[in-house]
Length: 223
Image (cartoon, rainbow, N blue to C red; front, side, top):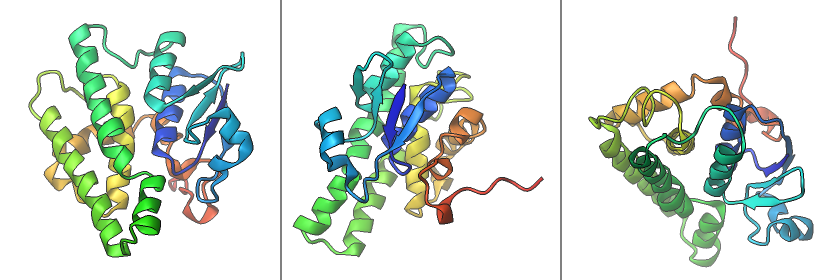
């Protein structure tokens, strides 16, 4: 498999986590959004939406949209399930994932930020306020869904990671990058910490990718 991704792309982060959890080997091909390589002819031919990530299967099939890719991987690849066995549990996990991937994340993508600054001409303070608002609103919403719910365990649903945790990890990292404090969302913080203790999440981290700028790369912990 070939994964077209960008180190800072949270949607790509989701797919890297899932591939790691499934133990699937893949080649990672960097597409630099900052340099607008996603709009180059070659990548546009691969994914006409010109968005990341894209997963190219061994037979040449191109899969797009991170949640659809996660569903495919869960159906096609052996390994730990990313969705619960029961229908109600699957609906809850999918709802948690969609809150982040479909409601919050689209409001903060680079193309939205470019529209804010290049077309609407909002200043830097307004851009940052926009990002912080939507990041904080979703943290509170997810906390309300997790805290005290009988199905919440070590992770967002039960005691094994699901696509809800895959999506939550990226949102928490984004929120922290915006300077938000998670003190008021302790369940989100606890679930995030449990996820980021797993090697599959650690190795998929945006600051640990081949195309991560050297100055920003995560340094190994001292022995």
